[in-house]
Amino acid sequence: MKVLKKIAWIAAVIPAMWACDNYEMPPIIPQTGSTLANPSSGSSLVLTADNPEEVIPFTVTAADFGMTGSVTYELEMDLAGSNFANPVSLGSSTSNIIESTAEAINDELLSKGAMFDTPTDVDFRVKASINQPLSPIYGETVTLSVTPYNSDVEFPVIYVPGDYQGWNPENEMTVLKSVNFDNVYEGYVHVLPGGTGEFKVNETNSWDINYGDSGADGTLDRDGDNIKVAEFGTIFMKVDLGAKTYTLGDPLYWGIIGDATEGGWDAETKMKFDRDENVLTITTDLKVGEMKFRANQDWGFNYGGSNGELTADGPNIKVSEAGNYTVTLDFRTPSEVKYTMTKN
Image (cartoon, rainbow, N blue to C red; front, side):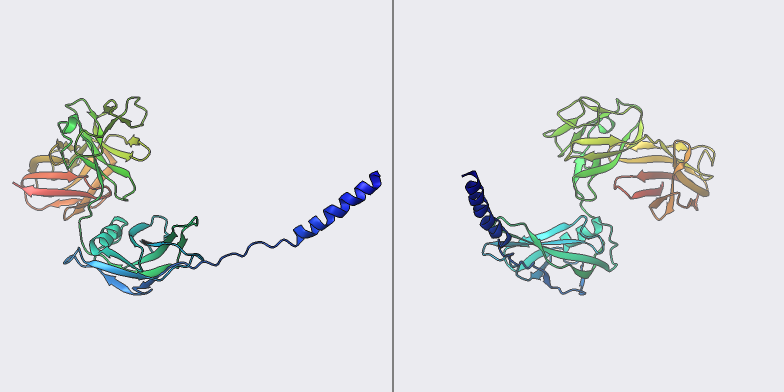
């Protein structure tokens, strides 16, 4: 009996195994992504400041998800060769036309480091989504030559009111900027001697949503204790508003130095802080000669240049006429350092 049972069991299993070997996977439904049809690949797009609100239409092809549903098309852009590491969305539509404006495209390109009045290769792709449990699909990359125009990009900002500027959250100058539009803000806080060295971080120019640091651990706490610097100076600050964290750099104390200044090339003449304009400033007599900006008596921190633009370790600034001058040093825009020299 036992032998008969074993034979019966084997007879039942073999057909099942044979059935498994012949099991056919369900067919894979082919999908086709959407791509930019107009402007076509290799075309040129020249943006102009004359009409920043000009609507620019982009025509895209239809995506095929292999099933019916409502499809939404989103146009993404990034600098050519970046493999869409940080794509930006120019708009979306449920039709085959996606509209954006010259100003929106221009601002996004300049924020990514493109030079105005200079043709720049830009990659475009279409992200198609359907109201079905399917992942979005991307079409082929199309490269256009886009020429942006000169414009002041309006970066997102957060406010940094504190003792150094009169605890005024409405001061539009004392802000940090998100140059990559990624919720990470950076800039300089000029916390110079004469105050408590305390400040806060506000999402708007009011006290409605403000952050401090109750544990002094680099974490932002809603309505927390004032952030306080350990040393006074011009301090680089970076805030990740999404992660609610911040970092503070080493303090720098800036001045002017050179044979055109009072201290010559041996000592800096210290600058003061203009809390309304958020710039460092000094009014002093200058001789015919040259000068630079230097911090902490250390040539590792110096700026030079011309025509109001400064670069690290840049050339000496020439003073061609002696007299009384008001000089400013401007760190308000991250990655850009500017100066003014006005003869009184």
